[in-house]
Every structure is written in C-alpha cells, then in structure tokens.
Image (cartoon, rainbow, N blue to C red; front, side, top):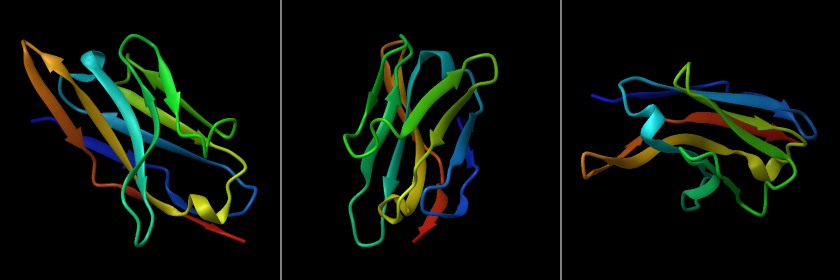
Length: 119
C-alpha cells in the first residue's frame, strides 16, 4: 500500500514563504510523476506543479516564478518551495503520485496540508 504524507503547511503573511514536503512510502516513487495540487474553499482542485520521473517540471501560470518543485529520489520525497505568497494561494495542498508499473496505471493522493496566507 502506498502512502503519501504531506507536511509543512501553516499560516503565513502575504509575501512570506513556506516549504511543503511529501514523503512517499512503497517502491513507486522513482517511477512516479509527482505533483502538487491545491483546492481553495468553494473551488475545484487545480494543478500547482509537477515533476516527472524523467526530470521535467511544469507549473501553473499563477505560481510560475514564485513556486519551485523538487524531488529527492533517495528520500522518496517531493518538495514545494512557495515564495511571495499571496492570499490567493490559500488552499489545501495535496500531493499526487501517478505512473505505470508493469503495465498498470497508478494514481495516489495524500490527505492534504492546509496553507493559509493572510493579507
């Protein structure tokens, strides 16, 4: 059973920074595209950033230049460095792992960590 455990959320003032971490159990990490998504109150879940197993990154336009996704395969951990935070970044942030192993698709989600940015 794969588990994704997020940490690092909290409350911060606008302009501040937070670093989220997502630790993955199991043996899928190196084969996974890892991603961060967020869901603000009353809104749909949206992509924030992804980091493929091949080393490619992708960001939502709203966070480009402010957020950085990275991964440490030795630690089975993916990070999201968030700088210059604004109240619009307030949301529950979810970690995601997806990929294919032995021809089987997999997609796992963490339980989320709350980020609150005050003005």
